[in-house]
Length: 74
Image 1 (cartoon, one colour):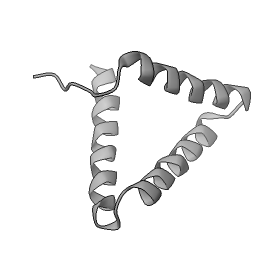
Image 2 (tube, helix red, strand yellow):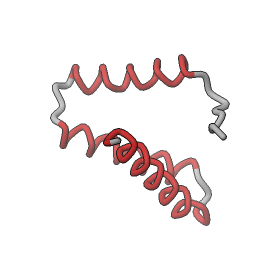
Image 3 (cartoon, rainbow, N blue to C red):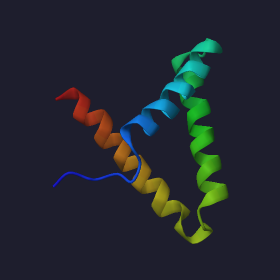
Image 4 (tube, rainbow, N blue to C red):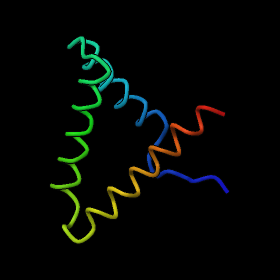
């Protein structure tokens, strides 16, 4: 059963493209891009998720990232 998002594909793509455009504008290397995105994710989790749930959210995010990267290899 596919996962249904409460966000539209257009909304997601618009934000992702905006972030990628900013990284390109800054001529950010892959390493710098990943560092910045990691810091952004940490900031969002630390400021928007209750302390008791942060580790769980980070673990779920990490697993989703692994799944997304792994699915590209197939």
